[in-house]
Amino acid sequence: MRLEELLFRHAARRPGHEAVVCGDRRITYEQLRTNIEKQKAGSRAGERVALQVPNSIEFVEQAYAAWAAGAVVVPINTRLAPPEIELILEDIASGVQSAPDDCLILYTSGTTGQPKGAVNTHANVIVQNVEQHVAAWGIGENDRFLATTPLAHRAGIGRLVNALGLGGTLVIMQKFDATAALSLIEHERITVAGLPPTVLRMMLPAIKADPRRCASLRKVIVSTEAFPAHLARELSALLPGTQFYGVYGMSEAAVSSASLEEQLERPGTVGRPLPGVDVRLSSENELLVRGEAAVMKGYFNRPEANAEAFRDGWFHTGDLARQDADGYLYIVDRKKDMVVTGGYNVYSREVEQVLGQHPDVVEAAVVGVPDALYGEALAAFVQPRPGARPDAQALIEHCRARLAGYKKPRHVVFVEALPRNSLGKVLKAELRKRGVT
Image: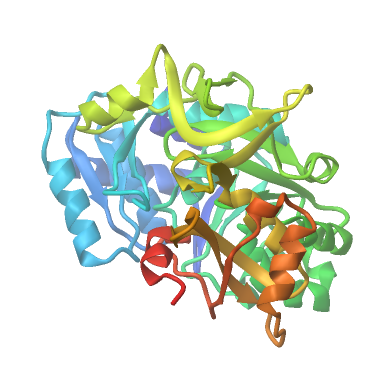
């Protein structure tokens, strides 16, 4: 089964059903099918089509037209800088023709080096965003899905395929705005929304002012970053009729999902593996994943990276993890994000989570910096809450009270905001370069 075949089936059985809404435009499944058929001649089978289009109905039509022609879509975030775009365009222009079952090439954010293109097949996209999500979240054809993130991002693709893969309705935000998002939820009767924690924090004041505006909201999918416990509790109290689900995955693989109840019962968990996903831990506690259609086909034009990532039938995620007796996963840290201080391994994520529990802290990023005595010391870059004036020593003591002594930050640097790339990920390499002087 292919993505365009799924959509055409929905167009045949419910042609007048609203398929996509964006701004002032509304389009039915039959209208969408007609537009796709008109545009598909612009692509060729096996061709890699760079799709650098802002959130719009045009993005949807051009993506499905490429798929209908047998081409492979390469979504490019419009917020990328020209050199980043040029790297992607040069990469996809090289190599052999893509296979007919290839669907998407999703480029990783490149926080640890040059971006790599994760090749996902039609089976990958359908299994991960239709079959697994139906089983995990109970979504269906009568839901109205809100996409707040760029459609060129994995999370945006997720909402697109959730909606059009099931025959539901996709409502697209052209550009995120907290007030506009709440208005869309209310007026479009949104039932399922993809809302990263950053977006939820921005929307929180408006939700507090009138929670009834979210009365239609059945499910919220929280992805792209960890869902802070204090934010989860506050939102669940404001919206008791809404179910929140955290998602753990990457451009290369779908891994797990956790309900809010599971996250609160087991702090730090990213849930249990999704249906059809097998996991195990290596001798170094790296999380390994396999499963039919759960893992990408491979990195485009990167034989060495594929040899490193795929070994003995398992995909190596690069994340350090643990799994409890009930099968729940906990991501301890990125394998390359570990600080070795005085001979001890310290996982920065653990320290960041503790700092994030302090009432004066919005967010923190922890990196290793050179230390004459210990080799490396932990430096915490902290974004305070508006109006708060936290004391560096108090934050260190806060960590000392909750972690082993060697895990506490030696340095605390206050910043107005943490540096991020176009996908919202914290640029730790930039923090390391900035240092603590």
